[in-house]
Length: 308
Image (cartoon, rainbow, N blue to C red; front, top):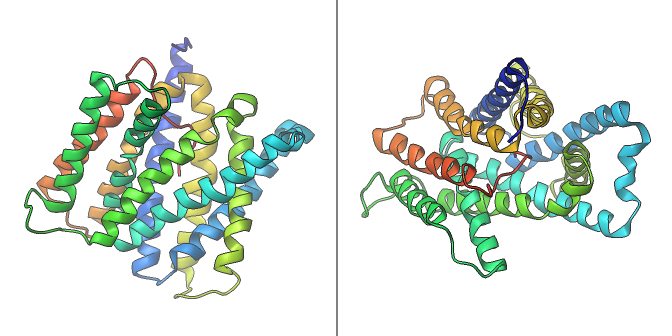
């Protein structure tokens, strides 16, 4: 457990909660761009990674100088970093935003939070051990939560499209890969360095496919403001303050506090965009968030310090 003064702990709590709230709101802002301004998810993902990557690298260079380039000294580290950016960063960002475009920010964010269950399953298979009772409980709660979220308790019908369900689960799987793949890098380099390079690599790689220099959609002051919000308040600021919160309150507490992200997305989607969220939706949300709490409070929590 991380021991810090009460004032530093409070600062850490505020930073982690603020980061989670900003991430949730940015998902709703993305939904606004997709539905109202006809912005393509792949275009938004590409520019988000490119610009945020440049900003975070500039910040890292000013703070650490040339040390930020040390990650490229060994070919093995360079290959792992490239895979993290080109595969991990791209898939976790694109599947999440595309899932939003097919459903809504609240549902997409909640489905992505099933990711830690897949992480648990991966390590159970890797180390050939049976899951603990906590992990079994998390799996059951996550399954029930997804069922309520996509059916509202009625087997005969789906309340969101099959495509939205598939991409939501793919988003959770992408989050699991994104959490597991860079573990070795994060043991040797700072989270800011890995994240910054990962975003830039992901943005450049994805740009070869998306060709983001071709713009589409409705561009006005609202669009520019929304895109700017996602890059600055939905990426650069929350990443920076969340990483700082890890040093103040520890990864376990910070990750648990990030469970407010789906609630933030749900509340802003309901009150701003008028998304209908029923009692079954809220119950499914609570059950899925309970899995995060159970896994985070485990002796060996499975969490990630890099949010999508």
